[in-house]
Image (cartoon, helix red, strand yellow):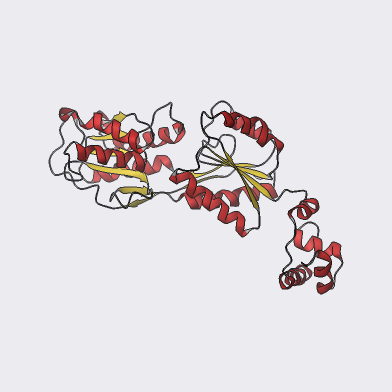
Amino acid sequence: MAGIADVAALAGVSKATASRALSGAGYVSQATRARVQDAATRLGYVPSTSAVSLATGRTQNIGVVMPYLNRWFFAEVLEGIQQALLERGLDLTLYDAKPGSPGRARIFDDFLARKRFDGLIAVGLEPVDREIDQLTLIGRPIVSVVGSGEQTSVVAVDDDLAARRATEHLIELGHRNIAFVGGSPRSHWAHVDQERLAGYRHAMRQAGLSQFVQHAHSEVTMPGGYAAAADLLGDARNRPTAIVGVCDEVAIGAMIAARRLGILVPSALSVVGIDDHEFAEMFALTTLRQVPREQGMAAVEVLLAEIDDPNRQRTHLRMPARLIMRTSTAPLSAPAGG
C-alpha cells in the first residue's frame, strides 16, 4: 500500500508539502496541490484519519444525534447527511437518543461531552430538559434539522407556510368547515406541531373562517391520527368536510378512520397532509412535499461552513414545501354545515 513518502516522491515534493497538500493545512500552491493529488490518485493513496487529524487538529468526524432511526423522516435525513459526508471523505458517528430511554441522558451527559467530532447535527431535538443547552456547552458547531433556531443554526421546512398552503388549498376547493388533526403541547414534536397549527389558524382567519377552527389533538403517528379522526368524524352533526393532518401519517390515519365510518374520501371528506411520506402515493394523499434528504445534505453544508469559520453568523434555512396534488381532496359537493 502506498504511503505519503511514495506520493511525495512521485509528485517531486517533500513529505511535509505532500501532507499539507492532501490535508488542506498550511499553504501550498494550486499547481503543487494538483500535482500531489494526481500522484495520490495514481498510487491509490488513502490518508489515515489519524494522520489528517494530527495535521489539521480535526477529527474528520461529524456527530449526528436523533430520537428515532426507524421513522421515515429521520431515516431520510440521515441518508442525506451520510451522502454529503461520504462525498467529502468524512466520518459519521450516530447517537440514537430515543425519548424516555435510559441511554438518552447518558448520550447527552457522557458520550457527546467527549467531543469526538468536529461538529454536530441534531435532528428533531426539541429544547426540553435543557438538552440543547447541554449541546451548546460542548463548544462545537451545531446545526439543527427541525428546531426553533434560538441557539443553533437551523435547516427545516417552513412549517407555518406548509400548513397555510394546505389549508388554503382546501378553502379554494370551497371547504369552510376544516379541522386540523394532530399534535399536542406534550408531543415530542411540539415545536413543529405548533408551527403547523399556527399556519392553519392563520389561513382560516385570513379567509374569515375563524368560527370553524377546530383542533383535534393526537399523537403524531398513523394510529394517533386514526383515533383522533374516528372521534372527530363520529359526530355527524359537527363533522368537518375537510381535514388538514399535521403530517402525512396523521392524515393517512384520518383517511382510514373515515373509510371505516363509511365516509367517502374525497367526495364526502377531503384530507391533505404535510411531508410526502413514502406511503402518501399509495394512499393517493394530497400533500405538501418536504424533502428530508435535501435537509440532511443542506445541514452538512451549513455545519462545514461553521467549522471552517467559527465566527460565522447562524443560518436559518427554511425550505418551501410544494403542493402535490393527488385524489384525497376534491371540491366541496354540497354547502358545509355551520
